[in-house]
Length: 171
Image 1 (cartoon, rainbow, N blue to C red):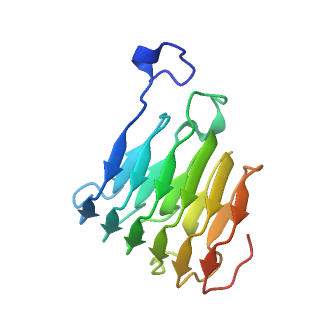
Image 2 (spheres, rainbow, N blue to C red):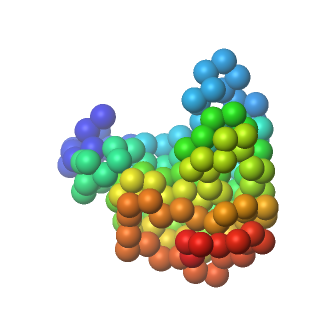
């Protein structure tokens, strides 16, 4: 894992994850995720159904911002249906992100949030540790008990035209 490499042979790029049903994952190791991409660029995750997970449904990014800037960015997470996540563990989300990722777009997703058992640091869209330069747009979030998005220690994100039916403290 070389987050600062300029050698194209060491850069994960151009991955497409689409039209998949991801569910009942992490049965034995509950910290597993539905879909995870770390340091990657130009990855397109779309038209998936992700549900019934003990922890995070979809995660993009890595490194908690300690290696920024990296080559990660220009990733698209669009038109996914996500529900029943964080059923056992906490500090995760429907869409979870770490570190600076210029050009990332999380849009047109449907997230039906069922409150976790712990209700600690669980968000439909969770921009954790130094998540920056990400656009969050046109998402629909149902059953958000606190806020539809959490911005822990990032900034310079663009958040607009989202719908949620809960209380919102961070929009």
